[in-house]
Image 1 (cartoon, rainbow, N blue to C red):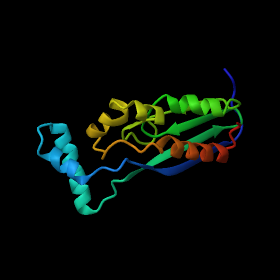
Image 2: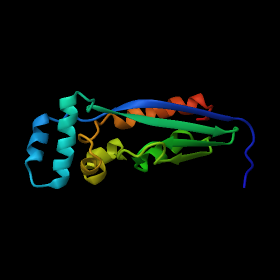
Image 3: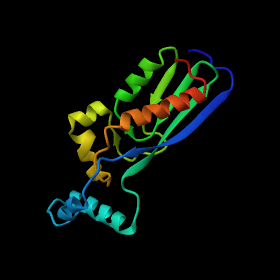
Length: 159
């Protein structure tokens, strides 16, 4: 066990995560289909379009909590894939860092660019069950990492 002394520093920032563009007609087709999960999401999306709600991006929270100079928690929203932890620890090798998912909000899986390219449940299909318009754009990982760098810098994390 290692003692942790000193001040607590925190930072929280939002970043907008873009979805890949989806044609409204695809939701209209899903409504009349026989898959109840696609129907439910299609109804939600069509209602959102009709009311003028934002469906092209999602606000995503990134938080850092630094305890003294010896331990930092990176708190990521959603069900993030392991790539975020591995990359953060690689980019901050001098930091005693704990990367946690499921923090502040769980809206869906948060894929990396690698996972998006692979496709499948974590990249695409889960979005149906979470009522999201579609898979995220490939810019997701870099947008999140730009924000990770900001919050870690603001709390004094060492690279």
